[in-house]
Image (cartoon, rainbow, N blue to C red; front, side, top):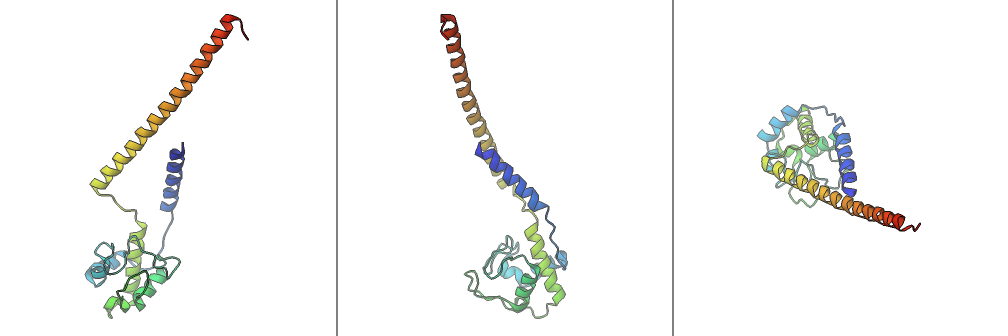
Length: 173
């Protein structure tokens, strides 16, 4: 009984989160090019999964801001560098060690990071198959439970009807 309610809440949450419009001033396509061709990917991973530096997709909350996807926070972090937060001992130098980055390019990098965190992740074929098997198993288990509960109710109803018919035949009220 609780599972359908939780699934409904999860679905509504996913739908409402998908409808949020995120804005940024940079160009995410240019930001991706800068990220993969520059020094960013060497520390944060080619797919923003993290490594020497924290993961950028999903972005890690390092504790130094309320919203790690705030464009101003990301551009400020890229511009000024960062160290000593979230348990990471590595130092991110200003502009990732690339002093030739312009403010426009930094905004492009920030736009790329924000965009990657707002795009729903795609599942690999193996993960999708595992997810399908899990949810089909959950569905079958719920149907078995429902069938059991209905049969128990039905058997009690049949027993009450039989008792009422016996009482009626014997003349008892």
